[in-house]
Image (cartoon, rainbow, N blue to C red):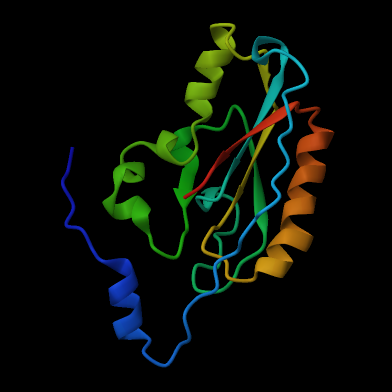
Length: 163
């Protein structure tokens, strides 16, 4: 495993943008506990990633803007046809550069399905680009759109892979 030098991101950001006020992080004080309605081995699981993963034939995400679009990826997608467009381009330097399962673990989920640990994996996975600072739009536009997609897939649960 490659060892990467650590960066004190907060200090680096403050030195690079000295006139920018401190970022106000979102606080979710009331995340409701929602029990799984059935056993995992009987459930359909959807995959959603914020890793900016897209098919080579799909448009890349706009890595320098607050891109609130998403891409649909079939569960049978060939990993050789996947690309990552993300602001920090972690894919070129980090583990996702050699193993897409770090940000898009469809292969691992299909193994769990085959082994009977998960009842089924939804036919379509969804990807968007994280590092979006438009919290209201993310919460009121993108999240509901993704939930509509996941519900249409008949998913009982979602594996959300943040990146």
